[in-house]
Length: 312
Image 1 (cartoon, rainbow, N blue to C red):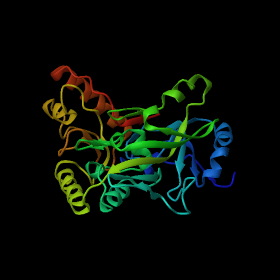
Image 2: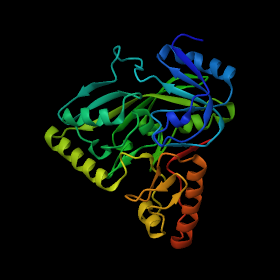
Image 3: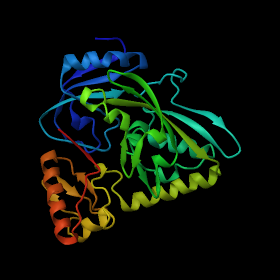
Image 4: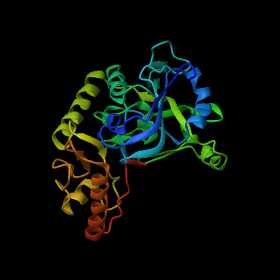
């Protein structure tokens, strides 16, 4: 196998997802260095399966059984081009109004939030408590408490399969509520060149006061600890909020809060969180999701769109 790549046969997705569900993928490819990325297309042809990029697994719901997927993952110590060895976050520029930060996609999002706030720069405190990697947060435009990745994002560095390294400014990206897409790559979909791996993200953060920002992040964390199952086996919010209101409220009013199916349940703290009580299956989770959609439609006339990604 190529240097800088590690291939694992049939990795267990239940070990790689925060909800601890799912069967096995065909293979997993761990990318340790930027130089190794050029060999990924060749390795994928050998392994087969549909390539999917996996961060920290905090927003996925893999199905049971053997899935026709090949996982692409950045090693936790992955250092993108332009970084010093082992470096994952650096300040590129600073003036009287703010600063530009460059983060590795492998950096945990909570680390980014804490470091930027502690340095006295704003824009991230509302993201407090969101798990996962910076790359995963960018790929879904993660957000909470009125803040999202889009609010500070300036540029994204990525590797496009069969094309190479690409750096795009935010204005060339399609960003929206829990949505991230690259229009110029979508136009190449027919040629099979639209698969990409986010490697880094550049953010512009206005100046703030460190003590105030850290206090704000702690207040947000306290709200989450009291209203969300932050310590449970979960994949975060199941549904996006429709026009009719917060999905959690609609689900609760439709009688889904605390609803169980086998080892899966909608949380008793927040109805928009599916929780694995320890012996749940993806099939049970999908049954609950289907029931929830039907009941919310019947009661509120709202069509719930998934925020969590179902794989397989």
